[in-house]
Image 1 (tube, rainbow, N blue to C red):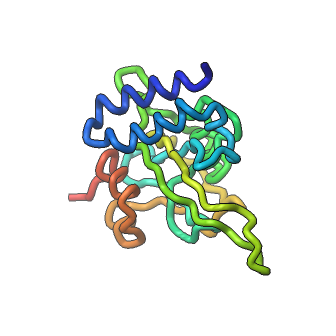
Image 2 (cartoon, one colour; image 1 turned 45 degrees about the vertical axis):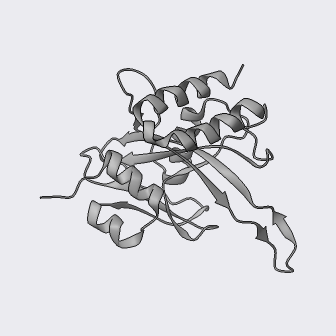
Length: 192
């Protein structure tokens, strides 16, 4: 089953973050009962992959200012049928930032997500008010990624902006719970 590697990964995640069992159960439910969970047409939602990207010295994290959602988020996006969700996250980092020298960080040699989140994506309408995309959920699997130093950032057409943030800079632009949760889990840490 092409969904089993993700289910195994979620099991490892749940062992590490026991207090997040409700959201893990929600994602497992989708993955178990929806063979098309990696396709963006899957409803009520689908699996997406994203990355919390740290600079080589762990002093900054990378966020994109998402054009459609108009807020600062970690790089990420749709799986489009790819069940290797860690590869999806890495692909999205490359596409949205131009970074090519990146490394997926592992826990004791295994791929374990840094974070998981289920969030609602609002419906989008065109200028005449016709719905062009219905409201749906993203079951986001987030990985910790380290970027090598000396790379130039390249803004994609999906974003308004792209920047490295220190801990205090990040707190100045967002109070979104899931972003703050990843900040707490992986940094960057406040400077002393």
